[in-house]
Image 1 (cartoon, rainbow, N blue to C red):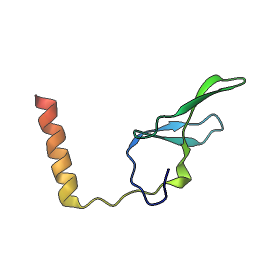
Image 2 (spheres, rainbow, N blue to C red; image 1 turned 90 degrees about the vertical axis):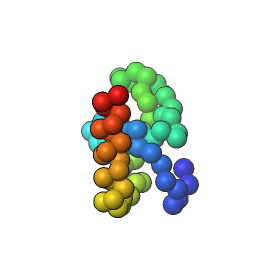
Image 3 (cartoon, one colour; image 1 turned 135 degrees about the vertical axis):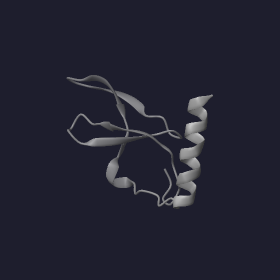
Amino acid sequence: MRKGAIYTVERIAPAIDGGFVVVLTEIPPWETYTPPWGLVGIGFELRRFRYLDIPDSLMKLLEEAGRETETV
């Protein structure tokens, strides 16, 4: 990851330590064996990210596009 770069959050998942991790679309999680859980996917700490402020006009377009794909 690079500081200042913009990434797409695929999902925020529960971590084995009780917190949460971020799984990115651009950087798939790597896997490691961790007893007693077994094979686990490793994401990035939530504190490494901030929300991107998206203008209301863009949010409206995204919502409209989502509705269009649902009806197709």
